[in-house]
Amino acid sequence: MAEINNFIKTIMQSDLDNNRVEKIATRFPPEPNAYLHIGHARAIITNFELANAFSGTTNLRFDDTNPAKEDQEFVDGIINDLKWLGYTPSNVFYGSDYFEKTYEKAILLIKKGLAYVDDLSQEEMSKYRGTLTEPGTNSPYRNRSIEENLKLFEEMRDGKYPDGAKTLRAKIDMSHPNINMRDPAMYRILHIKHHRQGTKWCIYPMYDFAHPLQDSFEGITHSLCSLEYDNHRILYDWFIEKCEMEHVPHQYEFGRLNITNTIMSKRYLRALVDAKKVSGYDDPRMPTLCGLRRRGFTPDSIRNFILSTGLSRVNSTVEADSLDEELRNDLKLKAIRPNAIINPVKLIIDNYPEGQIEYMDCPNNQENEDMGNRKIAFSRELYIEREDFIEQKPNKKWKRLALGVEVRLMHGYFVTATSVEKDELGNITTIHATYDPKTKSGSGFDERKPNGNIHYVEATTAIPAEFRLFEPLMLDATEENKDLDFMERLNPNSISIKSGYVEASLKDTKPLTHYQFVRNGYYVTDYDSTENKLIFNRTCGLKSSFKM
Ligand code: ATP
Ligand code: MG
Image (tube, rainbow, N blue to C red):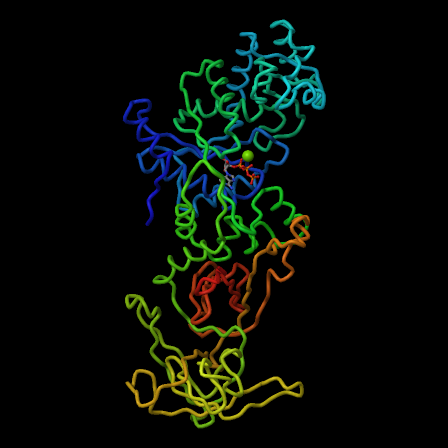
């Protein structure tokens, strides 16, 4: 399996060599306000794999300092997804568990004259902030005395003020060239119940203040985050220094992962779920880890996909197709290859004895003998794929069945189509054929070359099954639709449902079992599948459909 290698690994190695750190400690800090998506997988895999490479540690820390959208459902989902990906955190912590310690550090800054309580409203504050080209203006409340600030901050904590009435801000420099340094907010008032703390707090620390402190409390050495925090690093270091933190962590940024035609932002994923455009966060079309799992992707395919995208200080966009390629690489030699007929038509072999069933030897995986063999049924009545038959062979390229043409039924016999039955609309309902008993699979018959190989399932033992086929949720960007809202660019055909048959060996299939259906693609058993109704999701095709 691929090994992680990137610029952060180089930094870590040199930090160890120079004794800046003794042991690598990283963390993955998701906000429990949604399910994890494939973009998060980059952050997870980067943190865990880098720490593992140096026998270090990785904490899972729920960044739950914003109570508005956080929920236990997402905490549980995130823990479950990490476990599924194969990572066990060294510790599981919650940002909210540090509220008391964080509060004390805020008091310290007030006492040092480095923080003040401001009465400006949110809108006023942004007006005072200035722009990239113009300096900001000091708030009229900036010069409150230390005593007054201490008193007001305590009253904020005690719930004396309504939401937004006051803000605790760091006192840095309103004309700093980096806007993040223009007296950033440290605490705001929010009378909202917290999913873990209940109503204990009505002031909540801002990410920029809480995060560096949490990293320090936990002894994190390398705090990895995505590129948009690049110009927050200076503030990160400022808080660490001014709060007199004993342990000094360092922040490093890496590029975000984007995937073509894939919406990843939590806001959009939530909108899709809320508008019922998908069945839930784990809809197989969703780029969430739970959706990808249900779609049939494996932890190794995701991990290798992420590692194959590399890591740099540039945001990157990757073709969705390369995830399919990793899935094929992973399952090629691992998945059983049963016969399934997605779009069936009946094939009757008129010269085969009525009522007879033969059981034919069939390897579970043609490319991996270790997977052994199974028996598949053969009889007079079979189902084949409708696409494998045409009445008149159109040209030499047609390597399937046609009237008067002989093909090999894989793990069966050679058959020649003789006639068809049609309904009143002209659709073929049954194909009639004859077989040649000499051509039984395994007999070594080689006197004739058939016009191709097709697969089948025996009709009396076949199990009806539903197949769910997917296309991207979003249509390709075109000149006409490029400015449309993402909800209007949704692909109306992103799911199609087919009814067909699978061979009897799949009777006891369990959700999340992976298969390569012969000549068709990779499939996985869906959660909705029951003994009475088997349901399979198509993960991807057998070959790349990537258009150059
Ligand atoms: P979104 O922008 O999708 O809402 P987020 O960044 O707000 O996601 P968090 O829960 O804060 O979500 O993310 C946890 C970690 O995952 C952060 O360190 C974040 O940088 C990282 N992360 C999220 N999306 C991506 C992505 N597409 N590529 C790389 N890292 C990501
Ligand atoms: Mg975030």
